[in-house]
Length: 281
Image 1 (cartoon, rainbow, N blue to C red):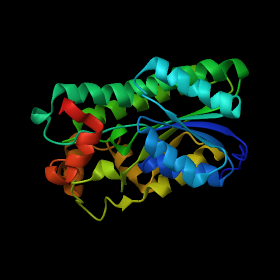
Image 2 (spheres, rainbow, N blue to C red):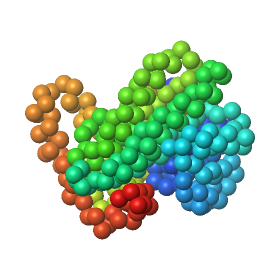
Image 3 (spheres, one colour):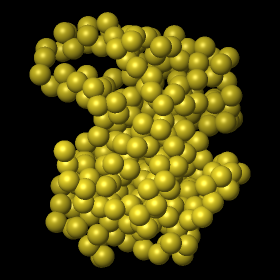
Image 4 (cartoon, rainbow, N blue to C red):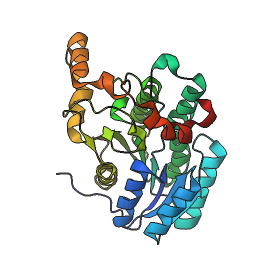
């Protein structure tokens, strides 16, 4: 077992997309471990509810992760509230699900702006503060789809592959900086992002966001880089590196990866799409 190296008690943490789903569960877990947290979210009313529920040391801030000035203001507010940041968690993400040929390019552009550019902006702004101090921890939330193909969710998958490449590269570039990195790969998580999607196989379990929240907190405390949630999903992510492509693809199809986002109930998904993509659909 990894030796605990970083105590979250008293740590100053800024987290994006913290009002719902994985973000909210992570805020709850970090708060339970004693962190002081700034919750960034475009839905400021939901972020305020999270802060009100948890009470002390949780500050809500309206944030558009795709806007540099908004992200700068978010980090300024975080440091004004809690002092120099120890941890920045780039969690915010959206997913337009459905056939690629039906996808509006405006929705694709928004996915790229929020998921990939948001994480890029957040990583750079965090590092600009952390590197001179020679300490800090950047956590980037990718997805199992950051290493696995996602039919019906192709642009989301592309953004998550991008986050993997970004974070792998930053870890090497800043290896002697004193800053730590974690790359999180959640699998099928029971949040609004999965609304209306299929449950293809018992071998592809759907788990609660609280498990991801615990994994993120553990990654910071134990300075773990490559974290899969649940851990056994790493098998699929690594299989493609060691077996012939035809076998790999047949295995993925047997697990039903082509059904998750293509056998989708659009009516059940409409509320999520309306909230996340608005008039870009």
